[in-house]
Amino acid sequence: MTTTQGNLASLSRFVFRAPSWYSSVGFALLIAAIAGVAAFDSRFVFEDAWEGLFYIGIPTVVASVFTPYVDRKLGGQLSRNQASLLALACELVTIGVLTVAGFVAFVTPLGQEFVVDALLVALASIFALRLFVIMAVSRQRLVVASAAASIQTASAALLLFVYSGAMRYMEFGGGPIARAFLFRPDEAPRRIAEMQYADPGKFGLLALICVVYAGCVWLFLTVIDQPWKRSLGVSVLDFVRGFIGHVAEGSRELETFFEDIGEDAIVPVTVLSVRRPEGGEKARFVLPMLHPGPMGDIGGGNLPRRIAEQADGLAFPPHATAGHDFNLVTEREVETVIDTAETAYQRIEYGATATESVRLTEGDATLTGQAFGDGAFLASTFSPEFADDVEYAVGLSAVAEARTGDLDEVMLADAHNCNNGLAGEDLGHVVPGSQRSFDMIDGARDAGARLAAATRKPFECGVAWDETDWEPEDGIGPLGIRVAVFDVDGQQTAYVFVDGNNMVPGLRERIVDAVDTVDRVEVLTTDTHVVNTMEAENQVGDVIPEAEIVAAIEDLVERAKADLEPVEAGMETESAEVTVFGNDRTEMLASTANAAVSMGAPLAGAIITAALSVSALIFLVARL
Image 1 (tube, helix red, strand yellow):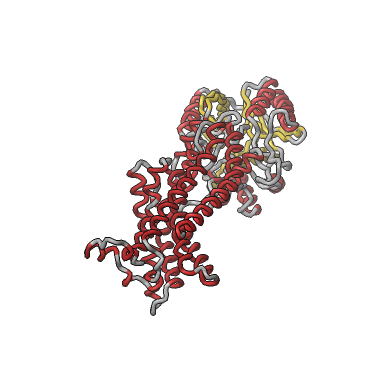
Image 2: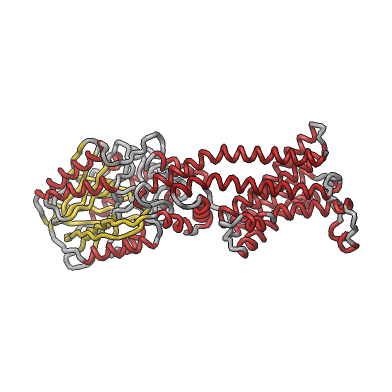
């Protein structure tokens, strides 16, 4: 990925899964009880805790329960988990503001009225926060979103109105029934009952401040949305809603956003099948010229696993020479790729001969591979130098050069096995016109010529697979580690596939040096993006000790050698018409998002400052 895309990807460190709604509510009630003990001064600690649960916890529970119900009735899609987490965050904001206000009132002559004013600002602030989130997640208009956004503020204001005795300031009595429900200062803790400044006028001020803050939310979203609409023709809220829905709930709404910005593309899908002479597939290498992104299982993020599920033999899905511009926009597109791969597989003509493997270095590029009949498999790496994705055009050019040596088919894989993460200005993207692109193209030409001229001989193949106990959080996807060993006239070559997204620098060399029971080893990662749902930088070797990875691979190589048997192989390529992100759309998306983030913080700070200034002015005018 480019530096701009890396900056966008690094924002994933702020992403986390929304906890279950009952966890959020339980934690909110615990915080409310603790706050009650700190705030109230009854004779018993448990009574203080109960009062905290009642006066602080009730608005949170009400908001948790009714917000998703109201939002969905109005056409939104806020989930219970999201609503409960949002209510908890707003409770913490309110407690924080009151704590600071109480301290200020204690050390200054501002007194109790300042605390009440601060409470009103806090209630208006959580209304604004909830309004922003609901508009982003549910894509509701401001007026419609205000209904669900106001629940927590209205609940807290109602409790304050009833238990502070604000009704005594009103001229109409409301009758005994109304007073029984709306005038209960005698049942409130002393510190709430003594809020003589909570007169009905304060609640009018609260409504006015909420209107001002709603206007600030609208202004912020309008300004921040303009770059997205001008450059991509979509709203930032569509992206935010889809992104939050994916990381918090596992929804697929982000695919709808990507469909809106996607473009049609024709991509080659190459299949190398290895089978036993008597029948029965032993291994299948499938390489569509696509990038398995953008993240998680969105689009083609889980492409390697989907490919592996369709193979009769053990599947090996290497990473193609393609970057994020060739991400599939939806998971539905994966079916097209799988169907195309199946078509190519059905057309394969098998042969019983292969060449010994070759390895050559051209500049920073090292290519390893061998021919099977008239087709060849090549794996390219820039290790020990850092590298990330190879541009689609570079890969196509390299394949074309490799085929000039009279090879009918060439499967060119990006080994994707050495990168230093998101650090530095150059993240190793191999682009057309760069020295590395010519290193790779020239190396592919020379490798193709050597393989085309090499002697074909009968060969054997052995495979082994360990799903491993590691999880995506450790940098290893569901395919674990897979090894294929080819033996041609006594020369043994091992191809090690790790279901991960790139490797820490030096690990590839340590594996190659450690596995000394075969003549040649190359290590590839699938670039699966299921390991990047919560972490943009989660390379193989970042979490798992390198010694454990090397040991696992050594064992699998021995198991694959023990599985060696005579085989035959063939290769075919078909083209698939799919919808991908499109040329430069990833860079445009990343640039726009980074610009929005860069300007968002100062803009939010300016709007918040202006909103607080207007609030202070409103309180000042109200006292005149």
